Image 1 (cartoon, rainbow, N blue to C red):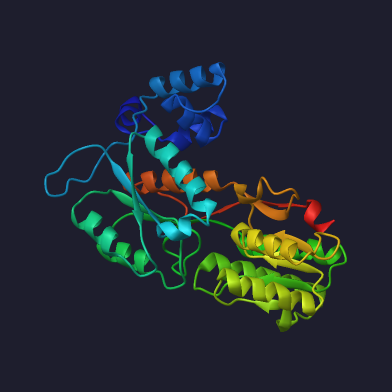
Image 2: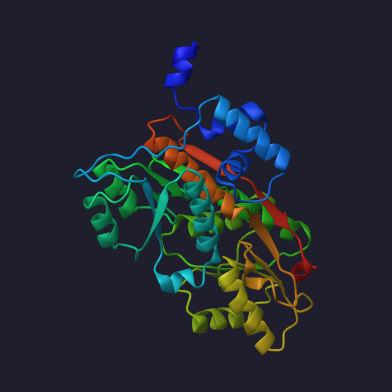
Amino acid sequence: MSERERNSRKITINEVAEALGVSATTVSRALSGKGRISGETRRRVLEYAKDQGYQPNTERRVKKGVPGAGTIAIVLPEAKELVDQPFFYACMSGVNEMAQANTFDMLVIMAGVQDLSQLRRAIGAGKVDGVILAQTYRKDPFAAYLKEQKVPFVAIGSLDDDSAVQVDYDNRGGCRDLTAVLLARGMRRIAYLGSSDGKVVNEERYAGYVQAHEDAGISVDGGIVSRDRLTVSEMERKVEQFLQRDADCILCQDDSVCSTVLKTLRGRGKKVPEDVKVASCYNSKMLENHPLSVTTLDFDVIESGRTACRLLLDLIGDREVPRKTILDHEVLLKDSTK
């Protein structure tokens, strides 16, 4: 590449990271002056970025003649669901960190399953350059609308549309791995407590649970599987049913469900793991203060937000991005399944 071409081309955070052998997150922290990195690493990043003429991506589409700093929107569930799902706060934190490092503002939109009204207003008013969907559905109305409007977007989670840019964890593989470990440790009647609400992540977790049983040649007892509406009273009733049907472990869809299960067992005088073992398909801070550590799947949720935002900024800048990015998971065996 000639000197003239190099000077006319915008270098990306990813290219800075690759050249220096560090992560994109480290580069964004060095450029923003936020986050813990060594002084030497910060100096290397800043010197290289300056030498290469790096400029944060602040290019904004001009709509209705309104200029200004770039803005991305993140679509989150309604407030009542956010309270029970720490995932979204961690995800939003990662998005905001990367957005600020690139001098973009973040607009938060909270919406019900089919409520596109706030998103339509934001798009119609030219307020945003791109959108991050923090929750996905099999037939996702938000994704369909954004495609129709030709607005750049990234989904955190899976979509049936392979042309959409997606950042996800292997929820099916993770839950399969977790269930397989529990089966290998001698648990043969593993109950599953979750919901069937059209959310891709919940469908994938249950599919992983079933697959692990199939791989082990063990039939799933429908009497210890519940995918009904997750009200507290219904979950309490299902826990009682699982106990009556001699479940030796209860696998919970997430930590919100797991918290209710643990309270219900404690209220019935049942000891974990002596009387019944418990595990969760998602690790959050919700159970940090529980006296018993819970076996779970661990995901770096903040990193999913950072990655989604980085990809969205590249889309806004008309740069090529991978259609699907799968992040790692880890099975954490703790006291609740000993």
